Image (cartoon, rainbow, N blue to C red; front, side, top):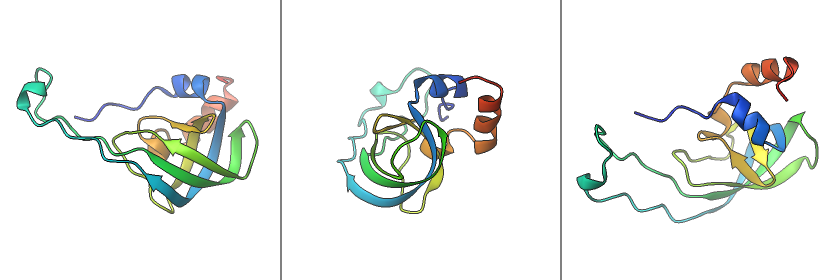
Length: 123
C-alpha cells in the first residue's frame, strides 16, 4: 500500500514558495535506485518493497504564485520518489528553494484544498 501524502499543513510550513506550474523540460534524470533483491528486506506485513524513481532536474513555467514570488521560469530538483514527472505535468508545486516537496509532487494536494488552507490563514 502506498504511503499517504504529507499533511498539507506540514508542506505549507516547509515551503518557501508554492506555485501553479507546468513542466516544460526534463533537463536530466539520475540513475534509478536499485530495487532491494531480497524478501528479507520487506517490513513485517508488507507484500512488496515498492519502487523509487530517480531524481530529476526540471524546468518549470510558473503560471501563478500562491505563496511567495519570483522568477516565472525555474530549474528545480525532484528528489528520488515514487513518481516521475514528464513534460506537460502541471499543478501546484510546493518548493523549498530549488527542491520540490511532497511525496507525490503536484498531485500531493488539490489546488482547492491549498487555496482553502491559505484563505483560512494556515500560512
